[in-house]
Length: 182
Length: 204
Image (cartoon, rainbow over all chains, first blue to last red; front, top):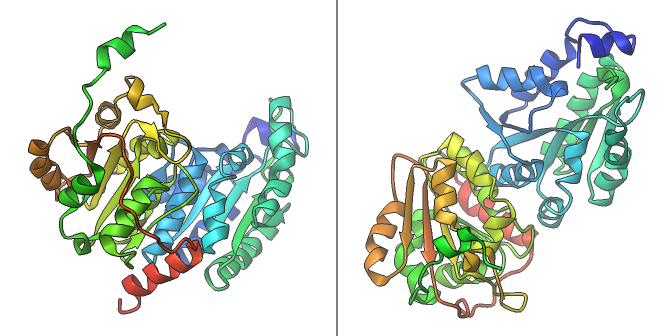
């Protein structure tokens, strides 16, 4: 995500601080279950959850496991977040029936591929379908395109999810995280 | 044409009836927070608990039961969480066994009721009728306690495994074909969520 990819897209090469900012924000909001299929765009959050003894860091084999897992967390009175790449959204679709049907609160952060400056043609079909697919299943999408938009978007999503009981995805766009030239 | 794998792993049919074996294995259901898969296991557990608030039964979201139980077990480490699901439901997301094994929550148990068929859709054979062994897949994933219940004589050990204290356990209950317990349950997922949370969290 950083390094070469950032240079290619004219992005800064240092690790963006918004990642640490949103980890702290999630923790302050009582999120204790961090579920993910690894993705470079979520590296900092994944590493921090692994290093944090107060949370559960849950590596999934497929993203839809995370949808059901977060429903289980809610049944037990805990809060969680699903970290995934845009391609993982496609793996979640039917499991989102659980969220919509039972009105579970649901928070996901999606690192986007297949859009602004993407160099891998395989990423386009799902990347371009992320927002319509999520919205069709009742998940509200908030897009963050600049680093200063990320924390406010995640803060807004946390309120919408855990206070208002909604399902919300924050889309971390390729303008934000840098396009991959491969 | 049969492959060698199928020939090697075929098992004799089980004589057990799920309507007797599931309650016998679980015992006092109030000791558990229970999550079920869809169809047969949802009815097994609705009948056992009288559609009670300690059970969240599903009628869709196939492949999600074990993951849902994992999230619940991590959220409620002082309560025993039991996932009751069928062979078809578990096969849809069998990778979940790997996710669970890595975390190994000691308060989580999985009871897979394996009738070898998709009972809701015309009783087509599932993969477990054709040689696939979910107990071996659970053991291969690294789940520490795995037991296979084939006959009446195995029930006591299976029941002990479901209450294992030190590690996640997986019990494969092999049953003969036949209907689950007859029970008309609440099919509203939102009502079931609310009921479960109120009972568990209202005084916590």
